[in-house]
Length: 74
Image 1 (cartoon, rainbow, N blue to C red):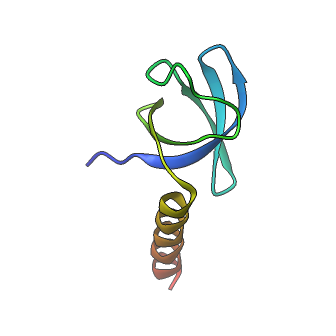
Image 2: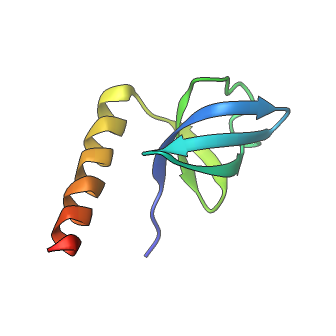
């Protein structure tokens, strides 16, 4: 199963980014989104930002991840 995760670009140098998804920070390449900029919300899959996503859509996805996490904690 493949999953793309919404994350915010918090650092950007060339096509190398650090992104934040729900407090988890990791590296991502923006090669596929050459006009990506600091602060953008992007979908990250296999270490690459593959598309932009709006705030509302990202928030919905993050909420679903939180619900799944809560279920696993029970």
